[in-house]
Image 1 (cartoon, rainbow, N blue to C red):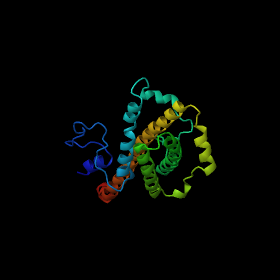
Image 2: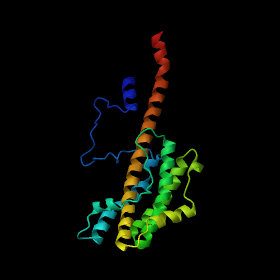
Image 3: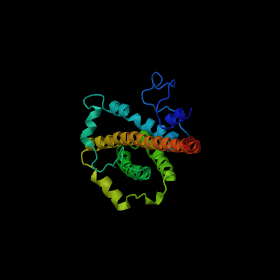
Length: 219
């Protein structure tokens, strides 16, 4: 029994326990997790769901000739860095994500100039602010999050401006595409760290609980 508990705490499969995901579930994102986890917040699905509709919106605007992958040619050089998959603490990851979302909110000003009535833009701006607030609440030192100054924001928007209207529109679409990827990878990065933290906590609790018995057996 104790061995099974240790295996479960360490994330290893226990004999007789199903390990495959249900049919139709390929990502594992539907796994039940405690609601106090940042990765379990419904805000993620709301903003990722909104930005996921960008590809269809793009294809509706350009039904012929321009393919979605063409946006790779219009990537903004000043895009925020993503959280590495390893060798990065949870605090450092949260800080990078909060700062990255702040930068994306500035970049969305360019999108708004080209597509002021975009519902995707509206949802992206609204839920980005909510997500930043959630991230900061999970940080030990939220005051360490640095944002661009007003002059830096103006310079950033100015740098991606272009006299060619087609180029400006492509840049706007590229920003939305990259924001979607940033959000998806951010959620996965946080989920991975939260899961690892839960496993360590569970393992330590079980070992602490059985340690006195283990000492008696060794006498």
